[in-house]
Image 1 (cartoon, rainbow, N blue to C red):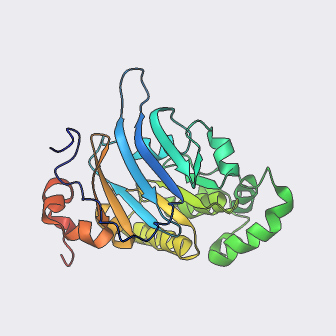
Image 2: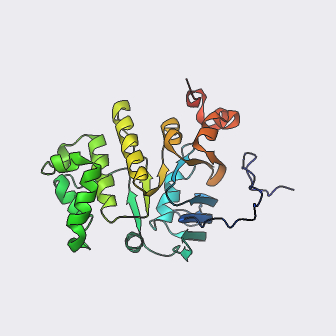
Image 3: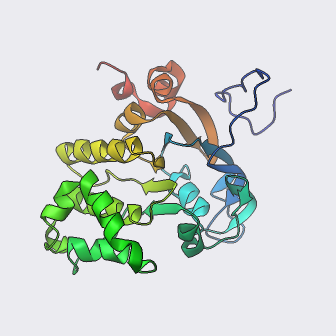
Amino acid sequence: MSEPTQSPFAVPAQASTGAPAERPVLASIDLVSGYIPGVNILNGCSVHVAKGELVGIIGPNGAGKSTLIKTMFGLVPVRSGQVLLGADDISSLPAHKLVARGLGYVPQNNNVFPSLTIEENLQMGMYLRPKEYRDRYEAITSMFPVLHDRRHQKCGSLSGGERQVVAMGRALMTDPQVLFLDEPSAGLSPIMQDSVFASIKTINDSGVSILMVEQNARSCLEISDRGYVLDQGRDAYTGTGHDLLTDPKVIELYLGTLARVGT
């Protein structure tokens, strides 16, 4: 008999090959959390990110996507379940301690200091480790030269897409193992969305593991190694980005016809 909470679209576990599986760099296990006492937004959500992976989280509004990464990043308390960083249980650690442990987070809104320049925003990312600033600055600006070229420009004068690149650059200043991205394309024009997704792929190609929540399901899954569809606070379906984009049931229930590859 199936578990009562199991989605009809849950992907069955792979048969064991006898080889030890590599431990994920980050995982949530049966995570339950919420904002109001007695009301859960996550209802037993389990996801994982392997080293170097880009994992996308999609799903309908209210499914718990942003709550998932806020809980894993210590911004929403864990009611039950676990968050693991490697072998370490980090479920009870606050966000500032998780940054020191190698996690980075870019929120959807208010993710730059508009009265500060680009360079000053990057400096804020290293305020606890100022001696390492120059090396990290050179690493980030070599990845995104525009941040150096326009380093004296106030962030309040930047476009939404440009601010998103600054926010990601600042989060990368601490050299995180895993970067959380919450709706990075929200409110951007289609052209700027493409630019931001290209920047995300550049970050991942540099070796940073990424867990990204995104409403633009097609663009998210096109660049994701794997994806999860959340529904009612649970991981309803998982697979490679391509498999989710082309699965008829996922298209019908969650993505719509615009998610079909080639349309």
